[in-house]
Length: 505
Image 1 (cartoon, rainbow, N blue to C red):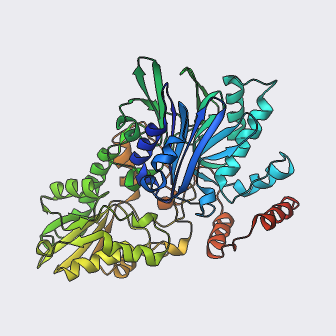
Image 2: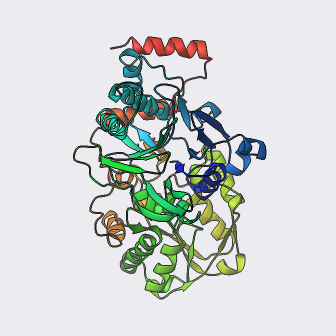
Image 3: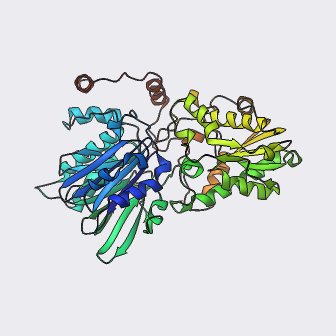
């Protein structure tokens, strides 16, 4: 999961992109990067770390130009090395820089095709570099002569849709021409566009979430449609075209559950409103499964679950209290690599207010339970703080299947609900009772807010992969690769490995 942004302005955009990435920091804490276009010259700076740590004054001063792209990264494919921080750059044709949010499911096959058929070398294990080279190759194929027009760009994007599988939302800057943005034909990852009227003309900003637009004074225009491509030239003229055959809208349900900021609107649905609905439906289930007299207080696990917990408490007519205080300088544990790091950081991130727990039967509400590490630690903290009974509720259904579209949970063994009943998960997290949201209730929580959202990408809950290309063999392969990482190699060895790979039919 990543956050991306692209801007076309009439004034320098370095500060604008930086501020947009700060507003999208929740989508990735591993690395950050900005690339700008100053005529026919790109300037770029990227590194591992948070936005505030990656960019210093000297870096910002070197980012010249009135258009560009940026990204905050949370890696789901490839490694977390600095060389795989985005944006990525390719020098032909024209020069293209690209930022990508999503995950390609056929990137390994595409990498072979790039070498054998397209004569392009992929230097990293990032699927984003593969996607950039596919785009660059198709632009080259669609171009006649030395100039580029929107029709050729849209023709190239149409070919990208035919070759690439998986999820992708993209912002790409083409040197000397303008900004390209497009979204996969299933609309899995979010992307929206906003505008700002100035004395010099209209400025456009494309971003993963609407909060990045509104926080910078841009007016929300609309979401980028599934399969659609938008091109904005350097004069601020906007072109758009549907480039996919039979596109369908299937936004990721986990965006609404956890990843997106509550003040964002994704595909016409307020994230905050959907979380309120999750609390409403979860309250109905709790009424059926737990004697309400056994619950003294309802408490959220900060922050994502707060709207659901508040609505749930109101529907159950039970007192709502804040029992955990969050240290906002500790990153999201779900985004952190390694079980030991996540477990340790829970105690650093949350602290219990003892007086709110002592002698009470507490209903804890969290947005979801993925690996169970955080849930187990929180239940233990509640008991240590004096809770008499700890009931745990999840605003999302059991996470039982790998997500292959940009969320870092590809190994089934890592998912606490995989192969376990609700009662078994309850024992694992040491709670007195556990209530999960039903999958249909989750989907209704989102479609109630925007009835146009008739289909959702909810594979981690229901095991249905909307792209239709995910098999058990595929899941086994990514699981094996995760459990058996390849050792780091130098460039000369990597080149030979790529050559050997390309020779395999």
